[in-house]
Image (cartoon, rainbow, N blue to C red; front, side):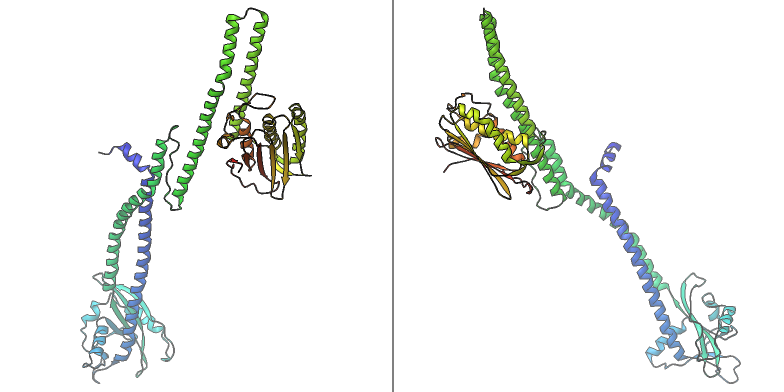
Length: 516
């Protein structure tokens, strides 16, 4: 037994509402179509009845005469002249004589030669009264050639309730020049039967159509909602460890495919966010472990072995250095995570890249001279991009810093900027130790450091986040970065950005490639 709660749940379901919509649509459609068809059928039947009665009227004027049968006969008779041997004429006249009436101008009924007086009494309900006949004849024009009122159309019923269509009019006797009143009747029973049959068909079709519409609607709604159910079931299966799930589209190009594509893109964004969170957690746990362990070890050694003030001071100094490095790592990780998750908004403006490059090259001249490296710049007159000055400076700073760090004494670092109407290209190249091919695909990963001892004066290898920032900054400015490097031949980083005023079509981050 279905409980009320289950019925309420079903009635609130989308499938039930779609089915109800289908059923309502079919009902309204059938009722509307039946109503219009009924009107059309009734008009057609009425026209057919009028046309048939008009044909009888025209035929009547050719066969009917009003005259005395004998000179001594005091009453006029309605006499039908036709060839009894002609089947067609006989059929027409007999059809006309079934229901007719002829009256004089005073309203007195004129019987046919073979009519029974009870004839007019049997059909008196469907014919005009004597008063009505006199009134209508009185309006007749005394000139037979002039138009007369009529024809008069009426719909009457007899004592049994049967409906008749009646046509009445004035007919002039060309011999005696007198008007006569003639009425022809046609039973509407056959037309009413056709109309009634249609009505019963309609009464049977609408409920059947309602049932069929409901069944079809339930089936069609179920098929239409199948992809929605798939999406819902897929959403239930999604978890932090199962974000790679995707729902295949039906290749129909409809709204449901759009829903599936939207859902898949949402999952992609969620997967990216989870990956960023996972990566952040992994990076934090990995990178913070070493300085924290070092700080703990130094403090424990000082606690158990230090005896003089200098020993304590040295332990605290080393701990402070590790804490400072720890703070740098945390700040860099938070900044990079905010940038990659879209929380770091860029403050873009029209920026002259030449001015930025000149300032940064001047700042790096002193550390370059200290390292015995020649730093040069080849810059155009003006070079404009739409960019965030702080992030562009961070990008160039990281590239120059890496180039100086891994270039031996006597080497050279060169910054070149080239512009065109569509794009701006910046190249930072050095004559340092270079990067082997197997490491090139990973240099933009967080905390990735190329193995090997550096030849720069500062042996500190850094945090391994500089190129990660470079990759993000280039992507955020709709550009691309390429790397060309080989061991012992130096490295060349090429960054391409859209020129100011050019549509910022996003460029993919190019896969680093080794020098051929």
